[in-house]
Length: 75
Picture: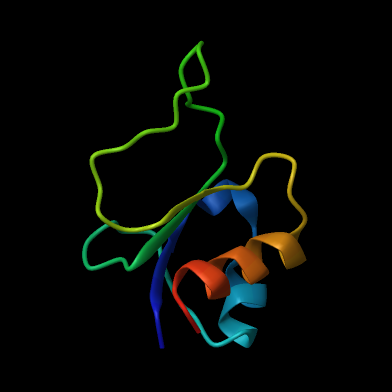
């Protein structure tokens, strides 16, 4: 199971667990991140210094987020 950090405001924990992900609210050992996108800067720059995939949930359905996680984690 892939370990995914999910911002708690998204309320996607149960759905992602049903899809086979291990959900965490700690960045430690996370293999991907799902964030709200509300903290992005004024210019919309979403670059990060992390080596794991970062999925911005804003404007996406839970199914789209799940599909993107699977694609980016090559599941």
